[in-house]
Image (cartoon, rainbow, N blue to C red; front, side):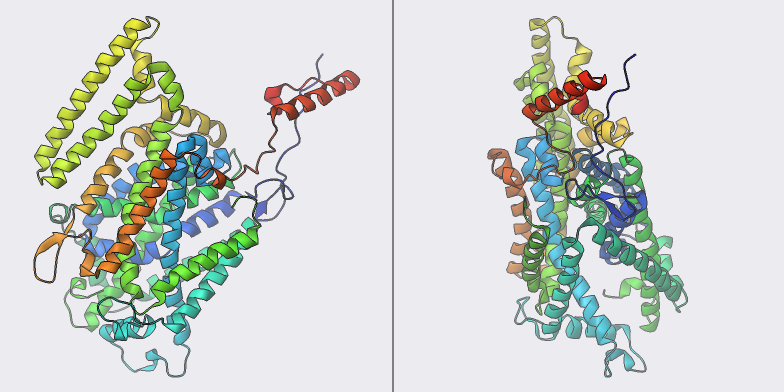
Length: 601
């Protein structure tokens, strides 16, 4: 009787620390699912929940905002989060590596995603610096809060003029660096450096503290705010009142809700990195749902605390409503961390100037478009480009590319007629007619193909055309990450990219009122800020687009950025043959069963 197959030595060995590693030969792993949750949820939860989410609820109709928010969470956010975590877990690589595995011309997609996150963290770090500044300033002997009574207006002026340093800013132009903010920005980046430089285990330990402390502070903040006079009025405006007219007056509410979800969940390469440190048998779909719902629950609870406080401020000001208030590859980890954090610190000094808040607000507006753009190209890469060569072999390049052009070309035509001409009905009819004509032509090409090859069936051809790419990706991912619903595959291919494309143009079409009372496009005129602020924001979009297009045209351009998969021991064909020879010798001497190439791989 044959002896049991010989099992190769495990590549990753478990230990009792927060992260697992193979003594430097493998990729570090989360030792427990809880460690992953603390890291991922801790990354997702932040200022976006406490500051950005309540401000959007405030601006876009109170309770009415929850309709597009929940739509974005379940139909866009969670599917994209599943995609990121699953790709990282399956390929055991970061964003550039994962999308390089999808297609060599898609490396720019992963790079654009990382660039988006990098640009974002340069100004988010300044929010932490301002917080540090305000916190430590409160311990001084002459601190602002020693006054008997402080009004909301005085508190706001103190923060803007003293902490941020806007007391002498003029024409939205920076005149000076605010020394304390530069110092606290440096302190922030030093903390980030030490979190990165010492690997996964160190960052997990940091997340245990920062995430746990954040939860404690949130509930302390919530408990205190609910006891303040006027807090009930604020909460009523949070969930008790809804401005349903906001959907017609500000249709960009949909794009802002989607960008908020993607922004908060960190679907800009962050979750791919976290997923790459998970064991391959972890349930990625379940983990994604836990992270997404925990993040949204934190936002929801934060809203109560923020609106209760706003209600109290309105009460102190003698106002009836809250609405009356103004509100590298083979590089030492430590060296790489030092270079990245040092560059980010230098970039963030722009926000440490007296005009820092103006630049921050402007870039934060335009980064919404980058996030939507990155989400779009990720879905296109995963749902349309994966295994496209196999699809072309089955159907022919003409059928495949005409179908792709029909799908996205009709959406672009509809957007041009809707937002360019300003006629939504014309946009809808343009979408229907152009799509119908394109599909009719695709059907004609497929009928000719079937005549040429009688072995083809219509059902097989339709499946190959409409779902084969993304279903093959799902099949490959399921082998590593467990169950992923079929509905996920449909959303990634036929819903999310089209919706994100529309929302990109919908956001760009939003209007505002300038200082002279004229209605102008918000894109390029955000809050009437000076041209340098607008140009800086628009350049973030251009830069992300450049990375995607340059990789598409020059597929080898970013090949050097695709890190080696350290999780698996890379064995080439010659090495496999050598190992097989050794195993055969063992079989001859011990009677063990031979290891096939497939078992070794």
